[in-house]
Image 1 (spheres, rainbow, N blue to C red):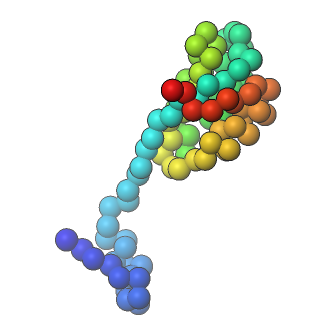
Image 2: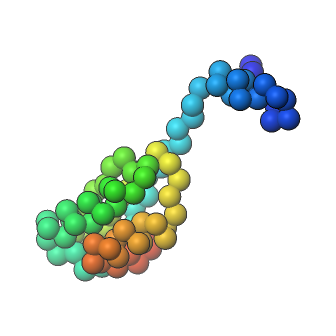
Length: 94
């Protein structure tokens, strides 16, 4: 096991020896206003442009968008992208 203390001047070199950790998450949100495939594509395009987003699945019939990320994103970041597409994010789906 390798321990790297930040106070050690060799910390950067020590950290380089550690594997990079990728934390991924998938969250489903409720979205209002979608009615067709074009709506799904609009939301998917905007949300996909956010840094760290690896997959987006918008479902007009269910009124949801499921977002998978490799980096942390806030609900406000997702909300802004959905708003930019012309729709309203209600919140996280139950």
